[in-house]
Image (cartoon, rainbow, N blue to C red):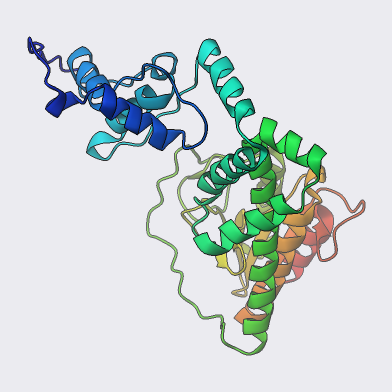
Length: 333
């Protein structure tokens, strides 16, 4: 790290770093209800001290960040030059003070503070309108009883996580419903757009399996994928197989974005997408991928197939196949 020196000035004027009046106004803006810290430091003063005591690339430790104006100064410093804000936590004494301060607020103020904290946490969901999000939070909190409100006040961010999960569930259902409707009315169509690259650059690679499309394939394969690849080296009608690289290779883009594990081409020109799953993954995510894969296969044309492959045929999700059944199908295509 490059070291720089900045000798401190002898006198720091309040026009540059703020004063006690400045800091009181700043702390009141941070904590809008109830009493505040007795002797807060101006944000500008803390920033000046941090500039002298640290280098450009320094990260201020969370134990130093504290809360109030000190925390705001640390956040400002860590966000400078396009950086991301760093995580900080309050020390035990400040935690006790904050809890005492929060408990001293009127009930309606505590609820408002919790709503604000949850909104700021959830407003990172880009697909949700801010006004609708705030109204949704208000509706949930306003319907809570005393016991639920007390629990929320102890862990507002925990409740924010629950609300986030609910919102994501509603969004996923909306995406699925809209996709099915637009597919039926041909507002969404399936057209060829993907071209296999001349070269691939996987992070890890393997060249021990025969009939691979590339000289070396992505080596990041689990045991089930490895077993399938070994089996694909036997049927004479398999022209090539390719380990699809997640988030880089071919994807089925619908109400979710799905990267099938293995791509296969037969001697007759059939393109087969295979997604392998372990026994513990017979869940909603697998069912969503099956539905999308089958929709893609039926609209892409008779040349294309999609299969979700499990090791055995025990309690398979609808539309999935066992390894033996899949290999039987591949051999016949």
